[in-house]
Amino acid sequence: MKHVRKYCLGLIFLGGLSIIAFAGEGPVESLPFPTPLDTYGDADLIKSGDIMVVLTNRIGQTPFNFWASLIFLFAILHTFFAAKITLIARKLEQKHAAKMRAEGKSEEEIEHNTPFFTEILHFFGEVEAIFGIWVLALAAVTISFYDWNTFKNYIAHTVNFTEPMFVVVIMALASTRPIMLFAEQIMGKFAALGKHSPGAWWLSILTIAPLLGSFITEPAAMTIGAMLLAEQFYRLKPSSKLAYATIGILFVNVSVGGTITHFAAPPVLMVAAKWEWTLPFMALNFGWKAFLGIIISNILYFMAFKREFAQLASVPVTEVSADKSVDQQEKSVPIWITLVHILFMGWTVLNAHYPPLFIGGFLFFLGFAIATKPHQSQISLKSPLLVGFFLAGLVTHGGMQAWWIAPVLGSLGDVPLMLTATVLTAFNDNAAITFLSTLVPEFSISAKYAVVAGAVTGGGLTVIANAPNPAGQSILSKFFPGGVNPAKLLMGALIPTIILGLVFMGIPQDVQDPKQPQNSGVEVTD
Image 1 (cartoon, rainbow, N blue to C red):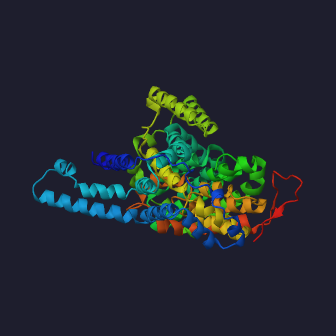
Image 2 (image 1 turned 180 degrees about the vertical axis):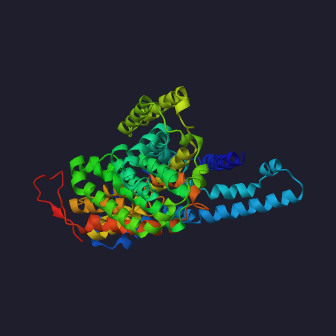
Image 3 (image 1 turned 30 degrees about the vertical axis):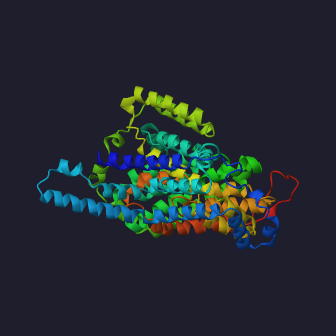
């Protein structure tokens, strides 16, 4: 009941938004919102190269820009304090419980009398809820500058919530027992080469799962990889240093592992159609580099923690078996049920851009899961819905950041552009970065390559850097006391990020623009 009450607090905030909405009802804003980039009339300023002048001019024309980006910054900073807020809430909860026990209250009474302020702190400490919470502030500022209809139309017609909805469905499908057992069997074949030791499972999962992301999409790969790491590795209780190194390298590998194809990685999807990037183009210019970088990073980390992997291999099975649920212990599912699950995943991936189709397919799947209940695990939608809420809040904020991101990207040379895209990705979804790059006129093929390479390289630095990351954090957060610390995650992902950056940037490779087949290519070098 306590958790139910905690998440129901979200309804309070939604109710507050409704009050603000009706209070701000006014005339419909005739101008497009957010302000289109081509209406600023600052092409000459952009050509001058003075970005601060460009940004100052845009704030002068549209002061709302400053406040929208400031709120976004506060939301990002909030994520860094989420673990501390949760810790404070737990201490207050424990103090209140101790006081009630001293008064002779029963445990049931204690559980049903948690202070309201403590529940509010728990809500504010949920990473997946943070960007949604700050959407309320964004709504209030938007209404104060414009009106309710402006914000309503922005949410209803401008923001694209397809990706959050897709992540909810694919995450729920990928976490089912038949899919997990099938993935475990595949990766178990590779782990068998190392006699199924923790280190062998670690290498197998962190190599195969990210590469599968190029075919079953990155959110599905993240879900499978994180759940298998939870079962085969994290339950052995590795050191904090290895735990953060593992989640960091998982995020980085999944971010680049989807670049073999042109349809599986969100940042690639944003540009593939407009720039006519095909599967052969991605495989030749990104895919093999991603594979090479993943192998180098995995081997380097494995060698660095080789001694600890040996220690984990000596942990008696009886010490960790209690962590495994009854659902996980059953290893037999009829092959036809697994095939049907794979077909449902295939349908979802094939129709990833059409919510009525993949949501309708998911409803049919729920019926199938009920009919085959003896072979199914309990389908929990709590984590997928929280992750979807996180991404919905992120894209809502991200849609108002084009005013500064686009000119920043357009003002840089190839190598600085790649480095800047990597850094910006840590503070905004990498798909948003690449999408905004399509708005920059006269982008050369080398610049296009640089911004996408930078965006996928930086996809593991923070939980908001890549759309699948919240799914991985949601699954693995229970293994990190107080939740995943953003600063430690950054440190864990930093070395593989540098390795992938050097692989994408430092190895000479001709980049041929599909739109200009006669072009001899542009070499991107360090």
